[in-house]
Image 1 (cartoon, rainbow, N blue to C red):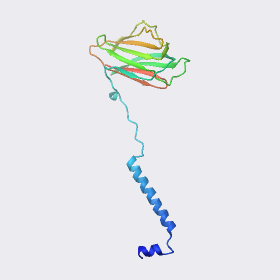
Image 2 (tube, rainbow, N blue to C red; image 1 turned 90 degrees about the vertical axis):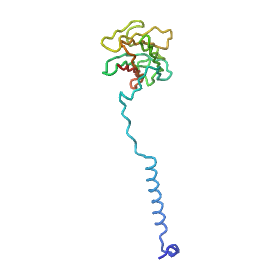
Image 3 (cartoon, rainbow, N blue to C red; image 1 turned 180 degrees about the vertical axis):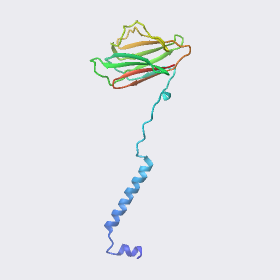
Image 4 (cartoon, rainbow, N blue to C red; image 1 turned 135 degrees about the vertical axis):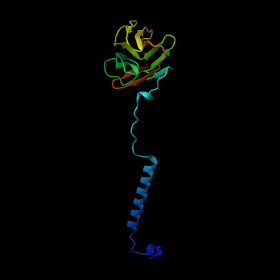
Length: 185
């Protein structure tokens, strides 16, 4: 039987042929699309300390905010770096979903890291402005909340006890909102 005979034959099941053809196109197109766009999700990359962007340059994170309070300041030695954590809450004490605008800069001559946290109404975290908190046996010598004339910002100075100029990394975490400064040893 030739093709012309099949086309002209009244017993040819055209419905069946069209269904098979349509399925072939759909399956073939799906396979090609799958290969081209790789619809299989990739695994999330693992972030390690080595991929952090430590530097001595000015660093900024966050977004404009208002009415936040500094609830807790924590600091500890983590082996290859020293970490400061500033925990942020809303004024009513509930968890903040916003990381406020933060700027950190390194003053080489004074060997200090200055941190400006905007959008803050109160400091509930510790000693009053001007009272120095000494830290012994670490790359960090002390920290202090410096007096600010802005009622919507808190400024901290971290004094370093080092012979070389260390790099630092400013970043944040959420749930609860935290500002983090890691200082390389």
